[in-house]
Image 1 (cartoon, rainbow, N blue to C red):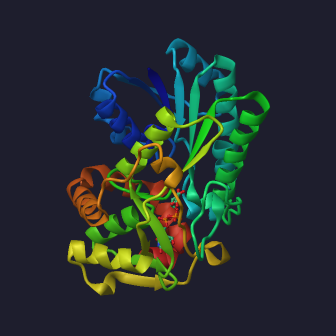
Image 2 (image 1 turned 180 degrees about the vertical axis):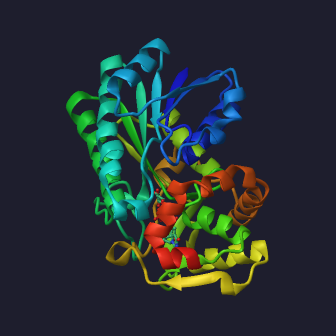
Length: 342
Ligand code: DAU
């Protein structure tokens, strides 16, 4: 079949394309991406070498452009990774989050309906459930998002639910945990800290670093999404979790160890997320596991390989870190003084 992968030039979207090209030799991919700040052609250079991959630059909100691609490419399924994804950026300004994560999703759902696409997967996040101080979220847990980012993802999920209920649009939602691996834009805990430590710069640990995240290797996340696409039921939601829960402070210390850097490079800062900083995420993913998926990548190995990848791929991340937009975000979010100090 031909898949339309939206957000293909981002972190998880590009990993998903790699996964499909490797595991489904009969499939072709049309990759679509708006190439905003976090989508980079350098991320998909290897994909562009495949005769089974083609690229289109467009926004998912551009219903006419996406419709044209779907019709001319005889697309039978859409997997949507296109999203604004960084909580810290959503605290500064949420407009792009609402445009892409809500309006964009609703436009895609219209394309699915209008063009008779057989299935769509909306790639969402465990953050829509809010914080889990205790226990685990199931797919039936209430949506209690705490940041503008996670609220926009929850709104996108509700668009999917509404289109399924109202029109029977065949959409599946996946909700993944914190992903790590190669090609992650250097603004998230692991990718940001890795590139800063590699440059002997300090890393800003929010508060006491006691928050817990459920970490998943990006290829395990990609495999989970693919399992939901091929074996899941329209209208259903699937959590994609690993039970690999780690405190931010632990992750930070492991990164220092892996890179042989001193503790003095940790800078504990006042928590910029304040009340919106979810203390813990944790999911029950038995529903997806019952379809045959389970994570394969051991965290210690995955993290070691990921850090080695960043060490070896300065040619990928340095041009990003040198962009004025990137430097302005770091200075604006962490404060000019702190930005320089960092
Ligand atoms: O849980 C899935 C979500 O994981 C995805 O939906 C989001 O797109 C993705 O960004 C991620 O959200 P988080 O906010 O959990 O990820 P982030 O890497 O930004 O932060 C992870 C933890 O590390 C969080 O408790 C905040 C902390 N942190 C983060 C950064 C960037 C720091 O202490 N310092 C930092 O500089």
